[in-house]
Length: 201
Image 1 (cartoon, one colour):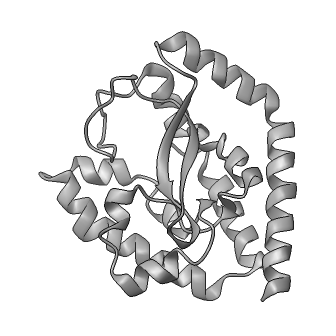
Image 2 (cartoon, one colour):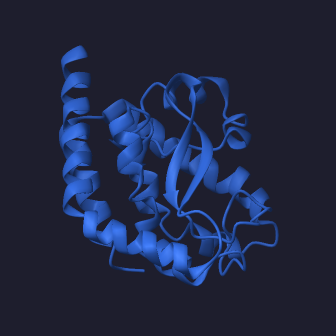
């Protein structure tokens, strides 16, 4: 078990470092676009719940107006989203700064996606312990399956209720499956699946 954890961490560091180096021109261009497109910082930082319940602040390119008070989920053509934000969200480019979280040790390349404390508080106790036993990831099985989550929520008369009672339990089941079946090869497969859908907005 210790060996597999060390191997996963080594893979994470190498992959995140390579990602930052190879994509640095893209990251710089996106940062300039976000800054010029609307007032506010380049990065959006939000508290998420990490391994063993430890809170950390996740990095994302800001895709919403700075005064984006409201739901902690995004619903369809959310009016808070900026012009640049629509593009970077469509291709999941807003998530790329999380390579930094991976290097800091807050996240892994693959693992259960980190949630905000408000929704983690709703996890059943046994599910919470299992899902939070690993570092959260930049992508996971739920990210692939629920790539169009905001569109599903837009079709609901009560998006937050739909998220809490329908989508969240399904995502947690996929997270539990990952925890139980995890391996380096599964991580590579999920990364390939994620890469395969990036250009299908």
